[in-house]
Amino acid sequence: MMPRHLQIAMVVLFAAVLILGFYVRSMRGRVGERVRAVDTRPVAPPASGPTEQATLYVAQELVQALLARYLAKNSPHILPPQADLRDVYMVDPGLVVIDFNSAFADGHRSGILIEELTVSSFAQTLASNLPGINRVKFLVDGKQRDTLAGHADLSGFYDTAAIAAISQQLQQSP
Image (cartoon, rainbow, N blue to C red; front, top):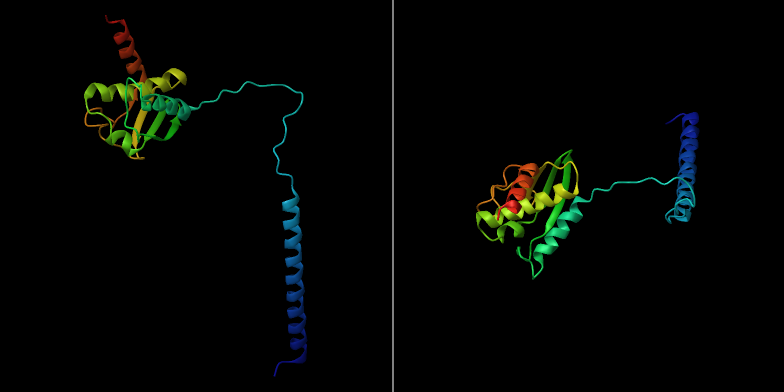
């Protein structure tokens, strides 16, 4: 049999565990009440104070706007109706990665000129609107693809300076 002093110690420890359990449970309830009582409304801006200019780079909105233009029924450069933008990543200074869905590539009209115009248009739109963009990479469903619809090479990067130079030459030719 256990000595009496150990039995008393066990009873006292068991009672302490029970009391602490009830205490923790009641504290948890109080914390829950306080969390629910916190005001979660957005903080209003200060009525007065210095203002600062902020530059926002919204590459995805630019690409989405161009894609919407190409998906319109009266578009001069028609894309497949299921074509969609998955995401645009600004990877490092000067590099943007555009990720389209598979319908964009699978349903694109085949031909070297039409495919090159598509990728050049997206690359040049970003470069014209976001200073410092000098390379654009295209992905399809988050993966690298060799070509757009059999002709335009998507395995590498598109140099926006080269695209701009070609665009200038095409605009100047009669």
